[in-house]
Amino acid sequence: MPRSIAVTFDYRCPFAYNGNAATIAAVRGGADLDVRYVAFSLDQVHVAEGEAPVWEREPEQRGSGVRALLFGIAVRDHFPDRFLDAHLELFAARHVHGGKLADPEVLRDAVARAGLDADEVERIAARPETLAALAREHTEMVDGHGVFGVPTFIEGDEAVFVRFMERGNVADLLRTLDLLQWPDLNEFKRTRIPR
Image (cartoon, rainbow, N blue to C red; front, side, top):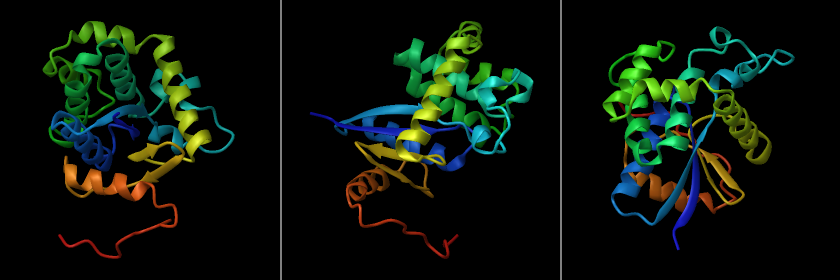
């Protein structure tokens, strides 16, 4: 039986790219994992208390990453066989190609590179139910697991926020998943990173 995990993502974050790329590499490499990719809005994390959440705002007031998340959700939920490719392309749009995630053309190009019809993905991304999925997933992660950032890896009731320095490293992912079940380890943070 595969090991079921979830991982949060926001295309704005390079560490989320590294962690999500690791899960994809692991799955494609034959690791016995069932991965749920969960949208988590960093724009929402930065909303001041008492202000309207990003999903209750007009599109131009939601922040730079929400539209990209909606594209990701649209692909994940309607074209699951193309999701992993599109997921990597949406991350690469910002972190490899230097595109602005608030620019719809950047997102359209990313999903087109993954072999999808950009018009169709954009239409699905604009639907109210896609925005509702973002609100539901983000809220579920905050309320159910105390998630505050990306990537957070979740297995059962355990959740850890991890920053991988190397993109797509399966060994890093598997080691982290093993530590996930060690609840006595609360925080492990390097004071210096050799670069």
